[in-house]
Amino acid sequence: MTQARKPVIVVHGGAGTWRPERSQAGLEGVKKAAKTGFHILKHGGSAVDSVIEAVEVMEDEGTFNAGYGSSLNIEKRVEMEASIMDGETLQAGAVGLLKDVKNPVRLARVVMEKTDHVFVVGEGAEKLAKTFNLERRKSTTALRLKYYEEQRKALLEGKFELPKLVSLIKDRPELFRLETVGAVALDKNGNVAAATSTGGFPLKLPGRIGDSPLIGCGTYADNQAGACSATGVGEIAIRLVLAKTVCSYMESGKTAQEAVELAIRLVNQRLAATYNSMGLIAVDIHGKIGAAHNSPNLCLAYVTSGKQEPVASLTATVVK
Ligand code: ASP
Image 1 (tube, rainbow, N blue to C red):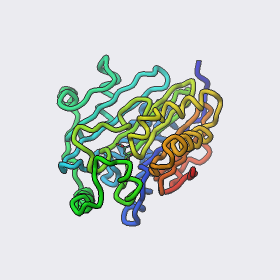
Image 2: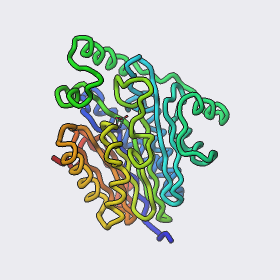
Image 3: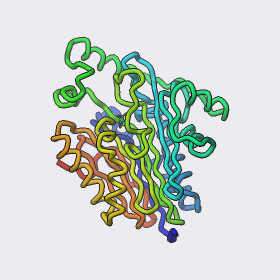
């Protein structure tokens, strides 16, 4: 049984390094997303509707590595991913390898609500989008093309080798700008939800799937615990089943903030601080929020019932 709660939403616009050229747009974008999501909660809407709408706003911005602003893979093509989880029913939907679906998170919702599956990728997912008349859009911004050229040049100069992801991140973290988007919310009925959307890791191999669409890794929600969305190097979140780990900490009584900090500490300990790019946001079932990262930045915004207006920043608690 769920209890009446004061609604709250937290959104993120990605971990990594936020360069000054995009910082303002990033902060404005997360504020807009948090405000949109909170508006739904304030008027009695569900946590699921709230996180979907918030993520959609960020997919449309072009500033974030999701939807319109998606990073390009090594072949200069977009392959987007997204997921959604409903903490009340434990229903979930996820999509991957999308080329031109305007709002991947919307398609993830179709998978959750209209199919018997959890995860649909590639041609099958595109076909599903067509069946449900979802809008299409070519997802390449001038900024992403610029970043691609910069990253590719570095690659060609032998500054990094793509398959050696570990040494790549360790030696040249500045090459990675990770700005996936995500949202977690608690509605007035005590239901939680989480959603995450991304263009994936820049210069990734075609066919690579990250944590964002993997339930338990990039996204998790359970009314008995809370909700979590991750951003950063997807391979870390997959190997540590990070979003579910955060929820398990909350289920065992930790607050959202304690849970995300413990999880980042786990990343630092278990992966020996090799990776410096992970960020987590969470909300627990009591309405407490949490945000922590070991990346240089985490772009985020939140709205709680007491505040009404979104509070945004480019850092939260940094866990070393
Ligand atoms: N987690 C995403 C991925 O690895 C990237 C990001 O968070 O920006 O695909």
